[in-house]
Amino acid sequence: MNNISRATTLATAVAATAVAVATVAAGPASAEAPAAPAAPAGPAAPVDPGAEYLKAFDTLAGAYGNDSNSGRTAGAVIGSVVGCGVGAVTGGSITILVSAGTLTPIGVLGGCVLGAGTLGFFGGAIGGAATGLPAVAAAWPQAYDQLHSKGLIAAPMPGAPS
Image (cartoon, rainbow, N blue to C red; front, side, top):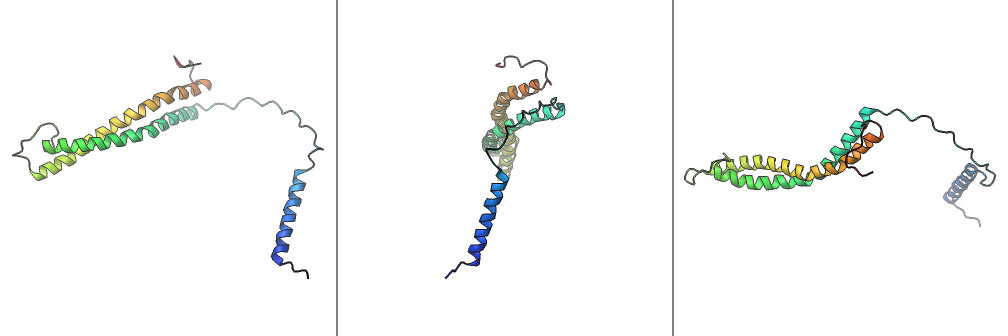
């Protein structure tokens, strides 16, 4: 007649125990006295200047790192493509054009590799600076204001909104 499986009995017992524990832990809601006012906080913890300056530097470095990647990538690709062409027609000197009669296939290939590496490097550096420095300029006032609010820089940033 009464066919209750062991799994059902065990699950019911676990659920009942969980409800009982939750009820006891919650306690009576209406019988609680109002909470006492909190004690006033003690003096603020001393500021570690090294940690605060490091936090400001990390803010600026993070802004530069996040925003300079796209410019660095585009600059490196464009510099490599242009550098390969310039290096190929200059035979690797990248400054003096070489006549078609003296250019060899090895000179063209070597010039392409040398030009791509050189102009790709400079293109990446210029592209990264072009996209990363505006982000640093935007993050600079925030980092400066954080240091000023901690008393580590005496004067507020000139021209900063109040």
